[in-house]
Image 1 (spheres, rainbow, N blue to C red):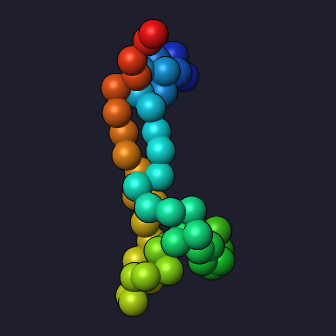
Image 2 (image 1 turned 45 degrees about the horizontal axis):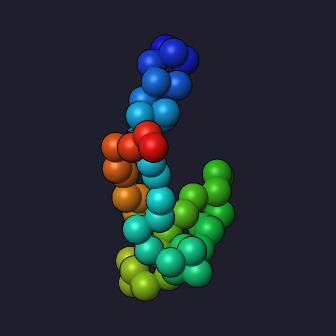
Amino acid sequence: MKVLLFTLIRAFEFELAVLASEIVQKVEVVQRHVLRSDPENKIQLPLLIKPYKRN
């Protein structure tokens, strides 16, 4: 399982789809991320995922 995860993580680039200042932490039993602009405070962490391009 770790090998599969390692391979997938190396194959893609991850970056935030919103500004970092837009993300706040919601603390319950565990810490989760929500968007400041979301009025319902649904738990989410928007990411842009692109295939990794080697130079």
